[in-house]
Image (tube, rainbow, N blue to C red; front, side, top):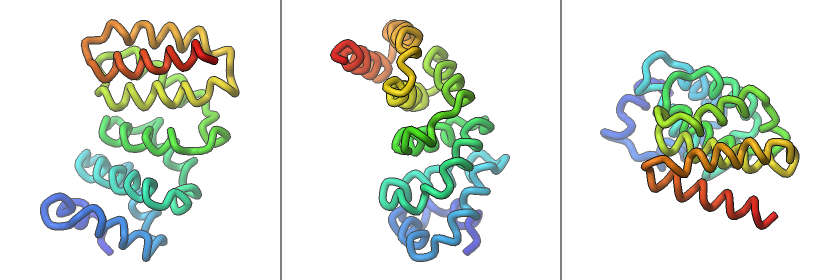
Length: 171
């Protein structure tokens, strides 16, 4: 299948369920789609990541062999749509896969910066929160970043920050 053409027509002619089902039936195509998340064409890169995210929701075992590659792409992408989809996948990944200091640093950067979209910041918060049991020394810095996020004008950011602060205090 020519995935670049499929991704260009995805929202116009095809249904995401159809695309995900074709990947389930032909998992060898996942690596081609993974390569397209690195595209310099933002539309192609974002849609490829979006499809991979939907595949992960439906069949995470098909994505698990590619998790390390996806985290590398997450570190290097310049597109927020790709960040959002890959962070969503990373949040669902096992903690041992997430143990990457560079991504942790990026997540803190994204939490603090109102220049990044709400979804990127919220998934970054969840990513860091999920690592706290393994790295309790991050708790103070993370709480500080959540308190900083509370002053954000976004209801989504404030809501997620409050929920995570309450969860930390209960521990």
